[in-house]
Structure formats: C-alpha cells, structure tokens
Amino acid sequence: MAFLVAIDKNACSNCKICLDTCEKGVFAVNSKGEIYVSNPSNCVGCWKCFNSCLCNAILIRPKG
Ligand code: SF4
Ligand code: SF4
Image (cartoon, rainbow, N blue to C red; front, side, top):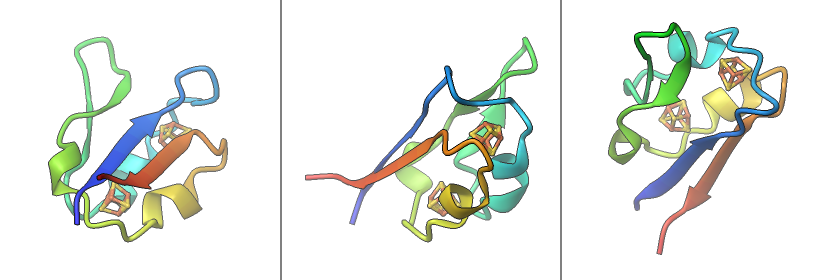
C-alpha cells in the first residue's frame, strides 16, 4: 500500500524528530535547514513519525 505523507508547514516547528524517527528515509532537510518530505514512496505507514511529532504537523494517508 502506498501512503501520502505531508507536513503542515504552519504547524511544524522544524524540530526534526521525524527525521530521526522514520527508519525509511522519508524525510530530509533542504539547503535552508528545513524539514521536508523527500521520499514519500518509501513510507510503510508505521505512524511512528505521526505519533512522535509534538506539533501534530504530519499527515499520513493511505493512497488510492
Ligand atoms: S516532528 Fe513534526 S514538528 Fe518536528 S520537524 Fe517533523 S513535522 Fe515538524
Ligand atoms: S509513517 Fe513510518 S515510514 Fe511513513 S514517514 Fe512516518 S515514520 Fe516513516
């Protein structure tokens, strides 16, 4: 199953907890030092990032 992964930039504090939590390398940091969703197709829907984000800024949704 594929998943849609998104970060609500208005809610995100850029703490990067999700970067360390995701074992599938879905998140990365851009040249400005901001977290972003770089490899959404790697997501296996484990919800670890969702559950660890203190800002409720991550959206995970099954695709299709
Ligand atoms: S864990 Fe949440 S608040 Fe922290 S960088 Fe990731 S999306 Fe943003
Ligand atoms: S749900 Fe799991 S695999 Fe998907 S982005 Fe979050 S931590 Fe990574």
